[in-house]
Image (tube, rainbow, N blue to C red; front, top):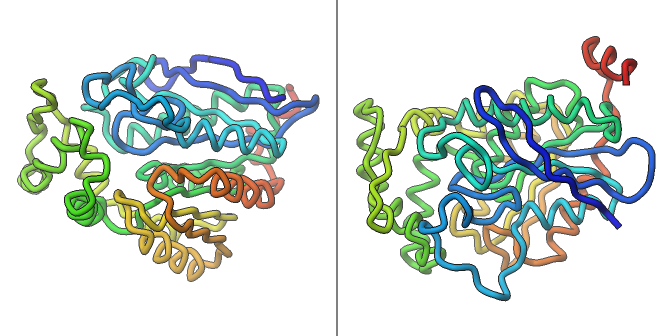
Length: 316
């Protein structure tokens, strides 16, 4: 049986809360950091109904666990530990979701990796990072700069600029009604073109009405995401990569993963692409999560450590 431990770690000027899941057995385990998608989410990868309860419709009784909680369980059953955490201002983490920018979220993920490297249960030579949705760009950014990360997992990622991906997604949700029951989704979908215009004009904030609450969105993160498409990051990556994408994803078209896989291949990688028929952005099918975890387990290889991590390994 796997076991989970709640913990807190420092990320810049705030404390973030997370859940470390360890597989059964002694010794040091390969491990992964799990990075959530963009809208306010909790450490399980599902909608943040603790810090932003009024922004989402109540959860259905039969709703599956969040995507990252399911990934953590699937990885643990294959002997892989994982850390998933509440982003800034979400769940029990300090800070503000509305004003945190993309580069800060990248730094937070790096701090999560650093915090876990002091844990004696984790193998410093076998490390991975998994990003869901917009978290895929964060995962790519962290892996590019960290030579000790041996594998990257991308679930429902985008390839092109967030500006283009959001426009396509708004049109798809208008057609299907997917996730429109959540006030935050409806508010952003209605205001997206105004937000894009505000970003283009260089305005620092945008006032968004969410279920009667006026939220001051910091636009620095939007501008950064518009100008940092994951496909540009993929050209700089040389690592084992697994992509999983539902064919009914209403947030990022599965063609985004296909394009990203092509760019990764052109850069000298050998990406493993899984297109899951009938699944949406949360990769709801249990077999899909198991298939993703199995592919990750096969690709988390031991890496040579830089001197600073060799010193940490010897001290442990």
